[in-house]
Amino acid sequence: MNTESMVHLVGAGPGDPDLLTVKALRLLQNADVVVYDRLVSDAILDLIPPGVSRIAVGKAPGRHSLPQDRINELLVSLSRAGRTVVRLKGGDPYIFGRGGEEAQHLAQHRIAFDMVPGITAASACSAYAGIPLTYRGLSSGVRFVTGHCRADRPLDLDWRGLADADTTLVVYMGLANIDQVRSKLIDAGLNPTTPAAAVENGTTGRQRRCLTTLDRLPDEVQKAGFQSPVMVVIGRVVALAETLDWFEPQLRAPAATAGGRQLGHG
Ligand code: SAH
Image (cartoon, rainbow, N blue to C red; front, side, top):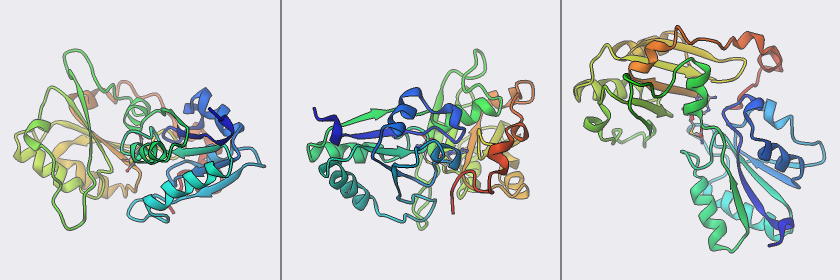
């Protein structure tokens, strides 16, 4: 296999550069070109050596500066030009990251690739917010769902199955449809006073947490003015967050003050 022309699909984790894997860092340092999404933080982009080309391909919520098929083609053409490509994606590429589609496209075009998992936002944001996703006696499982759907459609999830007091529910991209998530879960039988949290800019110097109950979640999030990226966690384990709080974002000052843009969603 010719490593010179390989595409590495790499998870960047949720924002804190210390959460990059050793392998991700090594690949970034040895790349010819890094193709990255907007969810990748500036603090991580700063780790790319100066001589390495960078190509931003968008993926901010609601707008894609390059459509997915163009991104797929770009990866193929860079690789065919003999460049060592790192395709850097927020969190884990295979969790709501369309990493599977990119890998499939590379496989179809017989481009050598490998896959470096990243710490996904669900585990990172909950860890930094003091929420164990499972906990003996409180939560026997966890489900990751997307709150994203086409603007003209209702959110199509198995609400009966998700309204389960014994497990934890994590909603990616849940901010826009947070009202719907709340009312569908309550309609499906989940107790309105179930503990619920939202974590904005998790793991970064600008992290904020909102700890509340399911019925109050949309109002509280709106009152606090939360903006994407926001992770929503619903379940009894959220009640542990006060006790297990440890992360003090302001102590991670370089990230908080470095020119305003910590997570690029612009
Ligand atoms: N592949 C990514 C998820 C991409 S979907 C992963 O594995 O983490 C984008 C969604 O992830 C955002 O809308 C938000 O819900 C969540 N997210 C990603 N980074 C986040 C962060 N730092 N803080 C809060 N939520 C985050």
